[in-house]
Image (tube, rainbow, N blue to C red; front, side):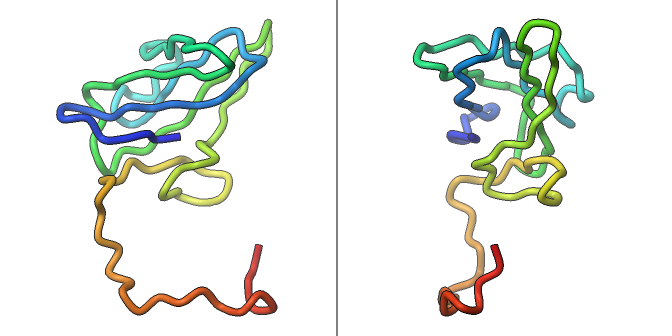
Length: 111
């Protein structure tokens, strides 16, 4: 989950209780597999401040569990390239310009 935009970067947080290590990778670090390690905070939560990240950057989480390495999109990303693509960093106070948006009736929702 992209938690908040820091003054000079972005704070990332993800819950992965069975992971041995987590890394955040993206356009801000040339998609490096191991440049930005996310230290464990406890209770399966991992966190990292990434100084070079900014709005518009794409990112993913690399989850290591034993020999297995999984590349995953942020399930709480505020914007994505596609449902199987990358998360996109956005400003936390972004004006979405949808002032008149109304949730459609349940029978018209696509999930």
